[in-house]
Image (cartoon, rainbow, N blue to C red; front, side, top):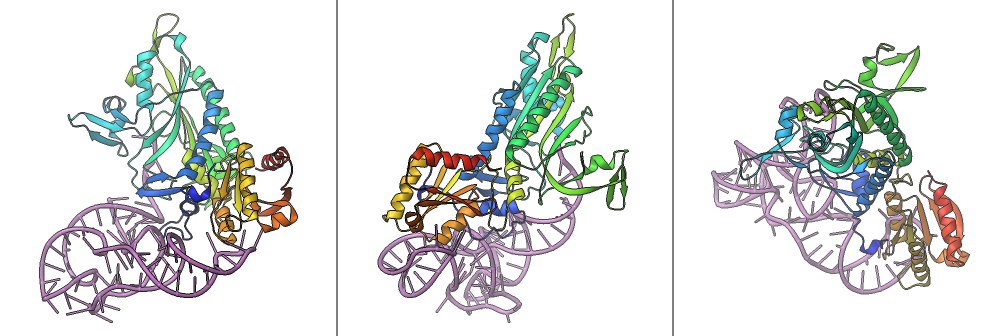
Length: 428
RNA sequence: CGGGGAGUGGCGCAGUCUGGUAGCGCACCCGGCUGGGGGCCGGGCGGUCGCAGGUUCAAAUCCUGUCUCCCCGACCA
């Protein structure tokens, strides 16, 4: 529960000169992220809290469908990648160690997880399995862009399901669709699940989860009850393109830029066959394991949330992602009665389990308010002379920048905590 | 990979054309004032001008090479 005077939150009044995307500008300005190189970003403490909020939502929903969390390495031997043919991919970082052994930096973990499945899954009794981890992915992108939206290194939750046959793989896939829908819902984002591009490999089906936002790299076509990737819509027999417009059943579809925040693929035996992941069925027949893989990018969810809800004053987090629940602004010089009151409130909130960032710096009110709105925590509490005069803590809801009813300064801590909690629950 | 742009203090920029003691705003440090919307006054710290080589009495500025970053497009398993 940090005090801002001692917290690493390097805010900037001016956005980086070369930034274009809203999320890029605001996340840097708000002190959430800093760049090290092209497509290489550091998450600073407040930014990492947001990232971890997403991670926790994803973890809970994965565990709820029986996912088993684990961790696989990023640095891997090249051999399995040679077997699956993915060694040829340009985006794959390749390197060698001092002995000359060939290594790669994993861009996803199909090879690794299937390698282990091949070692450990022997019988139909060992199936099904859902394994997942949160791990860094490395991709030699031709063009990283827009801050954290497209980077060469990023954390992904990737999960992998292993089944006896296609029908059972479909069951695991359906479980993931449910889990992903719930994750998306919980983040507070606007999102769509669209038919995915099956791509040249696989061909068994895929879905993409898209978050509409101005910096989106893809486009989604929309109508009531219909959402699809533009490329998919273009190839669909029941979608008609007339000039720049798309029509479905005579209804004009709207186009919206969006970013891909998750994707799920039915892999079939694409990886199990080349890597020898097989099991023995009841008849003692050796059969390949049926797989599917499921990815989600917390960083993109964070950036999409910034894009979707920002206003001219800065970020406005959906409450599920906010770095802190409450941004407490203490006005007046340290040592004054109003400051003492703010200190006391800070202790009450912290001890009461409310995530609070306390601006205890010796700065003017304007700067503090402006920075609070830039950082975008859902609730701002202010304690100043006025508070002492009126006996009420001022409460501002960030989203609409409106005053909520004040909370009595004096009284039982429980009442105060209940009031804050109640207000918190009413937010998106 | 094609096209365009940019590297000067922590951030944003001027200076480069026309070579001659490196500047501005913000931030930061010290002192004071102010104290409910990025406030005011005074005094300070901080940069071998991305790097290397060359031309010159003299290079941020001219020449050559090189590295890096950004934007648009292509790509995105």
